[in-house]
Image 1 (spheres, helix red, strand yellow):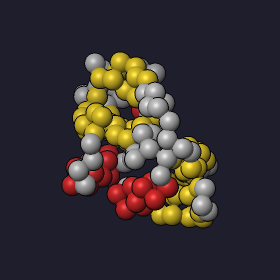
Image 2 (tube, rainbow, N blue to C red):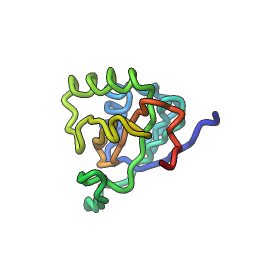
Image 3 (cartoon, helix red, strand yellow):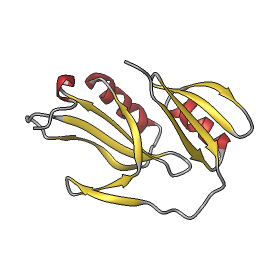
Image 4 (cartoon, helix red, strand yellow):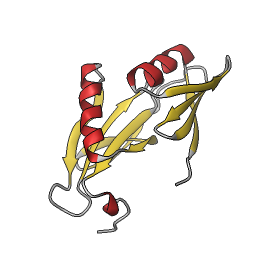
Length: 138
């Protein structure tokens, strides 16, 4: 599968470096005074410096929860998701939506969690009980 490239903004590159490298465990690649590359679970994530602006978080209601838009993340294997969510809890991540199971026992059963990086970028990490249902319509 090809890797995606995502470039987003960060208000403080030092805080972003600590978060993505030390908390999420992403390996740092190339960098400059204005940007940092990370290996984001096999994909290229670039954080570009952008001065802090007024927070303009928008949400959509999903399962009765306010989901931040826009957001990005990764789909992890089921067991990896659960180990990773415990790791994040041990790092005292302030979850927007704490880890939980959606569609339990149904097609598309998935674990999901939302939190923000130090610059306010919303992240969703999820996992499907059956990865073959990742793109199932029902």
